[in-house]
Image (tube, rainbow, N blue to C red; front, top):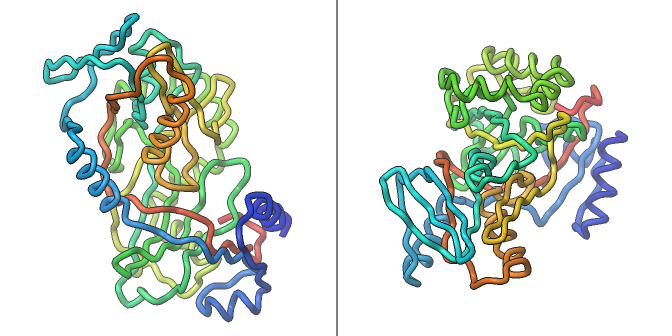
Length: 334
């Protein structure tokens, strides 16, 4: 229970309303969930970030903003008066200041400005399943296992979605392509870059057993299921239905540390969010908000007019928080 007590103390430090649940109280709230106890956070919830992003885009365009789709940033040139952005379409955009929230391409965007980022982005694919419709009421809350403090990942959890369905996941599998949303997605360039990085090699060495376990469970649905059955034993392998995966842009330091905090890189005319924790709102949205605040304090020039992102984004985005965190009988952070 040590990890759960440590998490309890952190919730207090952050001023969260929460309730400690005994095993019996956990079972009363969640009849299909087993555990030694839990932490209930009543203020938590999820939201459809597809709808949020659409609403933000509409408001942005209504105020005269322009969203340029299918335009990869191919070059950035910074000078005394601003930054010139060149796209794969051959278009040039000049701006006084730039906010970069490029996710999987954050380090490459920084390098375009002639700055050594001091980190490398390592892509981890998070694979999900959706439960069969008959299990839409299997849980009453969002269910999270106790996280492993050595890893910046949440663990396989159960999420009640906006449409009433329940998803399971994600795991965390090394992707062999920056935008490797499918198991078969492989990029020779990206793979070579991954294994040439001393920092990533150290990460793989230090977490070899857990990494191999993630790979095995990715290829074997029964292994994935066993992780969920630690706290929801009634599920079967036939209950796990395919669901789109996501890819996490994890910043790794040269000495092999998985950066688990916000990381910003600045130049005279730009600021870049290069890492953002995933335990809150979706990193790109949250990092854009934080970057704009930081830039107002940082920049000497006019307010930023352009945001650039090199990568694409796919899949449904939802908020992820710890509403009901439980300790399993094996004392394992599933």
